[in-house]
Image (cartoon, rainbow, N blue to C red; front, side, top):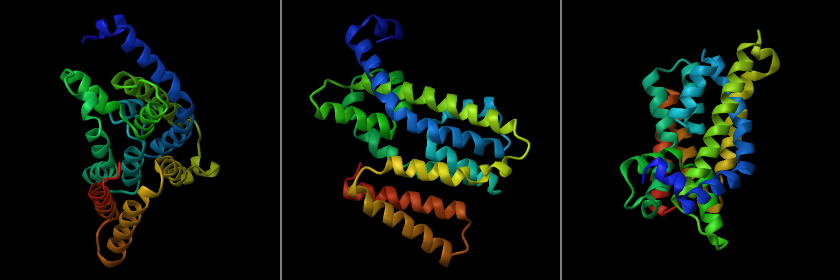
Length: 237
């Protein structure tokens, strides 16, 4: 199905619109830490255009935050990239659970769906199904489009504002990384099933940081890998 055919398809169009509409209340929270990330990106000498391009291509809040934080801390680009990837390994479990939605679709639709899937629109799709609503691939994509629009707009706004402020630290912007990361962690919590993966990940980071000479970037990578492994063994999404 091409883009032109999608616009002519009433079921696909209605699901796309419904997903976009339904995600907007959740997108408010995404916008809050999007602004915070924009402030942080400015500290890494990124302008509004660079921040917007990164948000569109990467579109992974926690990974972007930890990667930029590592760059600001002086870590190399490779370590920052690996830390960001490790933190978002949980998305492998989420996308694996969408095999029925992706089955039989052309490659570009699969890539689009994989790129746009997040904790929020994935959870919303299943919540609406539990209420008896018919939701599927295009509902997921509609929600993802709503989130990426809010994310890019707010991150660009935050970066543009920060570059206009002579002394960002004077306004407490140096705490933005911590505040944004706390907000993202809170949004990722989905119940007691998350407890063991989180505890295991935190324990690995603390032990590696205290008992080994590893750079903090590598302890974060170990923590992300161990948390994803625990979640996979337990069957947690």
